[in-house]
Image 1 (tube, helix red, strand yellow):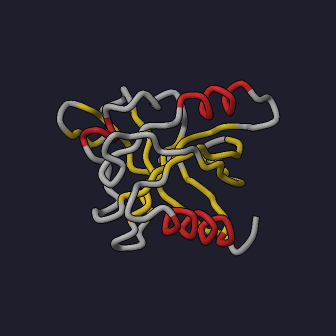
Image 2 (image 1 turned 120 degrees about the vertical axis):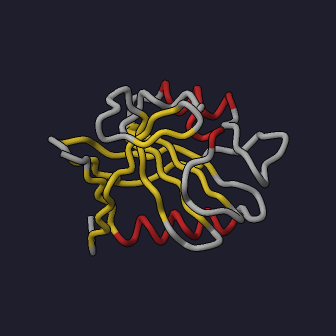
Image 3 (image 1 turned 60 degrees about the vertical axis):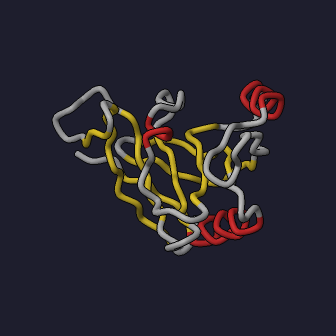
Length: 147
């Protein structure tokens, strides 16, 4: 069974607005929510400053903000997100080489096409796709009218 990512329309609009506000640089941050059975519910997001040396084509979380966020117990972190200002929402080789494999979901938002791609990294190659030696599952997204 393929994991379903559930996110409400208002959160999608807020996330897109945040990503547009950082153009021409990539936006990045954490996703809040919970996992139940085969569904990942995204309830919100927390922006993290992009400290990449090349922020228009890559992202690097601000280390101090990230550590503070991870150590806070009031957040239920279930994933990460970032934007692609001028590319599709499909994960790049750098995205697939990231260290976020312990989270159940990663979102990429394309500011060029307005599409959203959800994926997770996997060791189970039976249903996965491969790119440059890295395996990942594309996840289904359901946008609900409300949370």
